[in-house]
Length: 326
Length: 283
Image (tube, rainbow over all chains, first blue to last red; front, side, top):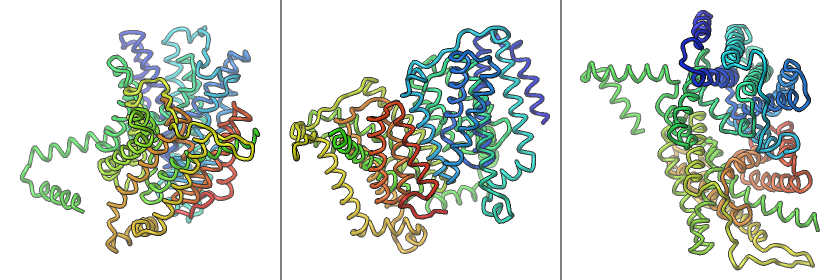
């Protein structure tokens, strides 16, 4: 709990330290995508079910918020509540379908479901304005300035992270991690594996919906691209880069991806290629996440530099060669 | 007339889906690898065929199939093998690869859709009992039927097929019996990628080739496999027909909601048989 508090204080000081609006906007984006990654981490990291269709929840929430607040003229709080409710309902429905399976089949079904929702956003032009997307008008009041928006995003993201932290330390959270590691044993112990997964999935959809609202407030524009497989995959990449099933991993991963994306956009418009290369790099070189991975690589490097003739190092090398032969 | 034409279009689209999905299903069944680059390889096949059309249609399709098969083999040897035993890493690796392929295709072939002419021989129409059919679509259906028969013969009637079936059932035991399972993996990956490339090349005259084709086809292939059952040949066949029918008629009757309708068969099948229509239960 304490590191979260430290992080919140540091993040709260951010607008005073950052040199300009542009950097503040990037920090805001990190919070928005960070919350989205937190939602993916809840189901993938703590419950062991990797979803490749989570952008659907971000998108449904964002579209619902935009359509209700602009199209139907609802006040913001009503549109927010309705968007969160509608997305949770969709999550509850998708969960019934996707959780008939687990593992790779779950991943494939969530991907297909996500693409179906993407197809609706793309094709159902009467409702969604198709490829042209929907814009929100300039906001008023506290959200007019970047700083107000930043603090709103910080409050929501920190609140959701606190919720996830408390949840994962609760008996339900322990049961989730038990289901992730030993589903059969948990089932033998009398836990309802399906129900635990279902609850996590719907909660995860709710968190993704919250990030969808922040997304709309931040970018004030949504198009089918927000629901695409790329966005779902970026979230999974963020979680894996930061470390699956860790508290701060998703935020760290989000910071990495958002920064890389912004830096890269200055030099090249081949972001998908770069994204793919980062995917391959992380999976092949540091599959356990950047921080633990870097620690392991540094340790290995140090061991090699300090004691090249060390018997232990030779043994590891020998066993590695043996492993490669098999 | 409306219904007969719709049926023919469904069958032709189902034929394309079959060529795409059967390779995915074989790879998954044998290696437990969900190759998410399959849609991108399909698109790559289509693009290669449009570039090779100068040498004739048949040569273009063959070139696409061979290039994609070689590429598949390379991917299996260099990436999939390195990640052996790590299901999630393999899936995400192929996903990363899919992004790279799609983006490089955009770089090479630009963002404009490329139309591919059908071969001269099949450009006309065929009249059966007073109803006019475009010849190329009939040919597509015939090719898919031939592919189905060939794959069935390969799997059920050859030594290679027997080895594949043995490795699908029990990989460790197959290895212990002296079956070169790792070479089988490469072979099946080549075969699956080659079929996807051929599918893309054959689909080009009907659908043309454009950026985003991969993301459009991949979920359809996943649906086919989820419906039919993973690793099952008959499942891929029946699933392709079903999805082809539902998608085509959905687009004709309710163009806005064609994608939503795809949701329905998945719900029904998963509710009744989570392992798919022809799938065996996998732990």
